[in-house]
Length: 350
Ligand code: NAD
Image 1 (cartoon, rainbow, N blue to C red):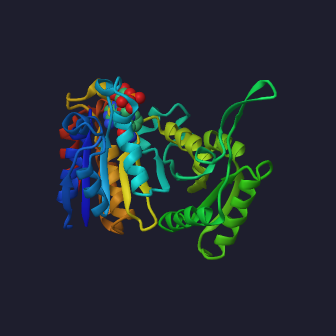
Image 2: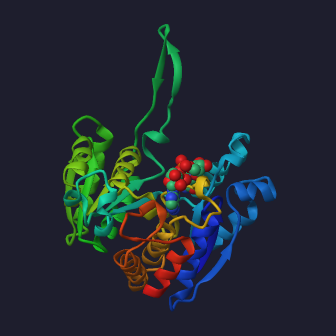
Image 3: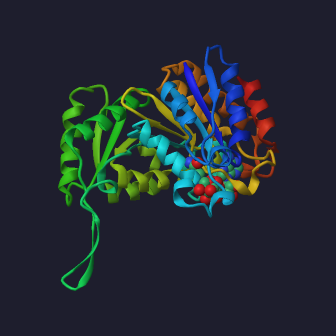
């Protein structure tokens, strides 16, 4: 089990140190090696995604990433920006499936902008296709036609692209409550009619998973009306971009949200959904739980270590129940702790 560890910039090294401690505490044999990505890589080599990092990432079974970026590198030319490193590694590894859980632990229900009874206990997983759709479709551009400016993009999916992301979603549903909702706009867009047809065909291979379909406008409404009705949602790149951000905000606590991006062989890049938080970097106050939960996703999806994944997730639930909170999720009546102490609490709970 080879893991390429990329702490990155800002709070990245602080939160990664805790995730690595948690992994080391499990009775599993990992080979972990660190490399540079983002601003720290620019400083050391002039390249946000150096060859040595690329080599290590390609050879590893999984990549665990902190976060990249910060004001220090904002004025650099586009090619040298830390975000370029992130796009580079995602592209090179062929990561086409983005898995974003939105979980609201009952203890944190007040962090949501929705009423606690609507969101407490929320546990949904959004599976977003990451490499196709209107975001990458050709032709595209802005031209002058008939004397006025004309903007155009192309939405397309092949049936094999749809089947491939569909399989990831059905398999993920099998590891959960076995309900999958496919989101499309088939009443208007032919591409998504094909999406719906292929998802329905695939359902025959997964008789143990209950498939439903929903139009994206309704899905956006249902996510704020009654989000707990969903287990796994699967959708294309553009709808997934919007719905996964909507779903993550239901939880109100960005320091808690992990993510995974997978290739065809379940090799994955795992990272918290938040950024490098330069405003609190180096202060020892960042919440490491999103990174620790990303490591749990890695155990589940790349290494098929479901029991270890549940142990880590169980430990996170326990520290919340015990009342430990970093500043971002602090409420009066709970105990405020720093990054290291939160890591200690997770280790103790493990
Ligand atoms: P951000 O997620 O870094 O921070 C937003 C707010 O949330 C800040 O107030 C921050 O302090 C807080 N926050 C984020 N993570 C936290 C944690 N673990 N614990 C406690 N508080 C936390 O977003 P931003 O401020 O828009 O971006 C900052 C930098 O991060 C930028 O350079 C941006 O490009 C980069 N970024 C990187 C990624 C990534 O690496 N995947 C994603 C988003 C943004």
